[in-house]
Length: 323
Image (cartoon, rainbow, N blue to C red; front, top):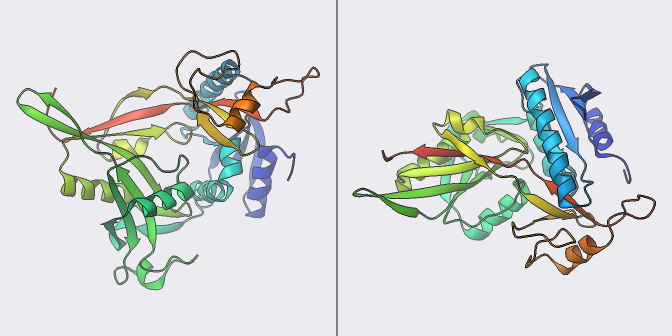
């Protein structure tokens, strides 16, 4: 599949898995409209190639894409599944399983058939690196969700792919407390930093189960979290009782197309190369980014590209009254 466009690679993957789809231009975007397995409605998959030669170009592309996504969402009532090229290259297996899950090809698991336990740093990090788009993150509290051995038909029978009773199927992590005074109260606020499950599963009640466990164990006054708009608007947080508090600004990344590793650019003034002064990018990425991004013929053969995400929606759950 070398030199094949990502949309063609995804189309081939869908075809191999028996899904009906059509390729369409929607609001100026080249997308795939895929018929879901059970509900038989069209789900839009939006492959995003990473082509920007400088941060300003990435910002312009992102704004155009976001406007088109809003229009598609308003027409369809469904948020498009956005797949950026670097995610597809670095985490292809995970992204493929995640796509299939959103197209209703998944293994159902019920949170009531699982148990939650504390896990160590390495166990959490290894799982998140494999199953979360952004990998691991700094945190204080780490929890794993495990299939029970004797409760519920799923756990008793096993659910295939080596997922026997006792298998860890999801991880959630939370930060240490950030404290501030409100009158005579000390408010302890925590960030829900990561949640990830095995991508081929749909865990009914999984996030709610983690949330209840954390609240019971830590007794926080306040919990906040972010929903990455590359994939969803974060409706699940609203169902869990969170309120939408605002939006986190988009982040611009430099992407090394040899490794497809993305590194966030800092918000300091940019140098002529498009890299911020004092940035701790690797020598490889810096060297690639400082080369001329376009040859005289307009060929884009340099290994550095820029990509700006859509930012995140910020949610908060207040468990203690305060202003």
